[in-house]
Length: 291
Ligand SMILES: [Zn+2]
Image (cartoon, rainbow, N blue to C red; front, side, top):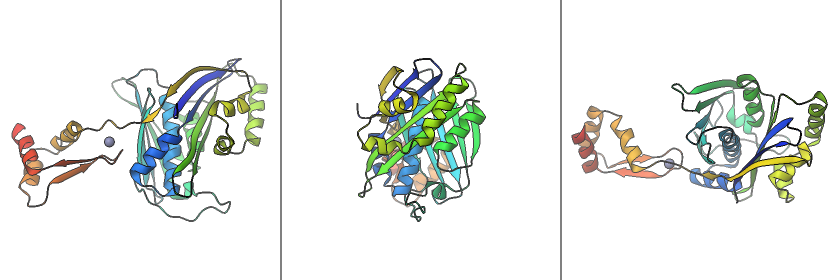
């Protein structure tokens, strides 16, 4: 189980937690998109956060979409996750090269810029639920926390980490979400706040060989109940049929123009996984004829 999500509570049911090891997932995503390090960090953090939000959904068909739109060089990040551990995502600009921060860390907030984070949940209602927050931090984990506080009125700690190798591959990636439950005492909350203050880095702990569960125990104490541990994966549900539907949505006139155009065959690229789908003129004419 290389990529996984765990969820549970502390023994006294004062906090619930979600944790994810996403090293493999972020590796797949960043190699699909050929991202530079700061984009890998931003995309990996967003995907890990969204994946854990997916684990909060109730039904298998529920989905969550996290969209970041900013004026920094990345421009935006779009990630979708579901309740079954599937996640996919892409950056609007895959290669961004900006100076590191003074502490030697990747400047994710600089690459994101002034931004808005929009969370859309499709939970089988007529209208999807949408919540939106201004990204005050831009480091993404804090912005998820702020989203939970503002849009879901939940006191939430979000920890996200992506550690990148010299060859740009992903060495470690993961995340933890801790939410305060109604029965939590002030004393218990203060205790966790103190532990969080002295907590340094999730990926550093992973480098030392600690599992996500080990780190959750560092924060919540050894007495935790793990209710669920499930596989997670990068998964894109694009297909030739879906791309065909996207073409159809262009309308008959536009498609006729494309089919009559002297240019070469049409190639559609899936944003999420970079898979290319080719439609030659004959195929486009057939689609037009069916309309
Ligand atoms: Zn795809």
